[in-house]
Length: 229
Image 1: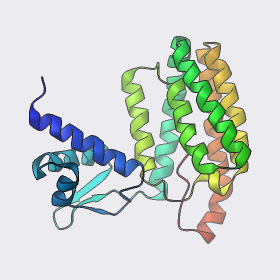
Image 2: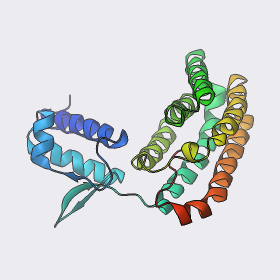
Image 3: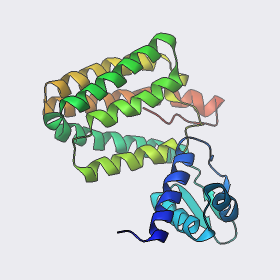
Image 4: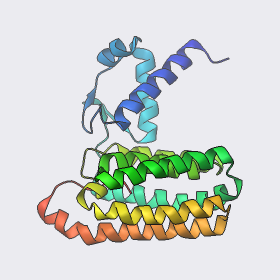
């Protein structure tokens, strides 16, 4: 059985991680032990340990003169995480598609329907959220280690979600991505590992190509970068 301090640290870790991921704690924000402890009903010790765990995840920076802050992610780092994640997802799709059960496929189909609804009304924020759920459902039967690696890449890019979204900047990308998602879903339903892998590689190439087409315009007109694919 886990010790009480370990349980408290794990609770603090989960809570702070969720707040970073959903934007309540923004990049560059100071993370003060006393304030976080009071909010979570904990002493400073488990909060300090949680911040160290988040530092290992790359979501928090701890410096002697500043204390802990939410990691600020550069354009190059965001693109690197997304590119790496999508290569990992190609491998995950190859592993997962032959093993998916009916429940996982139903979850993916429900996420796909949510994506369709978001496209219909041009809701890029809803599309971004459903996009992650869709991919996670399709990849859920891959090896746990691989699933964890992909999740970490999602989370590290998700820290920057208040920057500009690819789907928001290029709404037509939602429709094209959804067509690519259809191919992924069909391969998963057919339990076709090789087909699912190849579809994910093409999905990645199309995403990176869209970024390349927009980068020069963003370089001139914007300071922010897309964070979701």
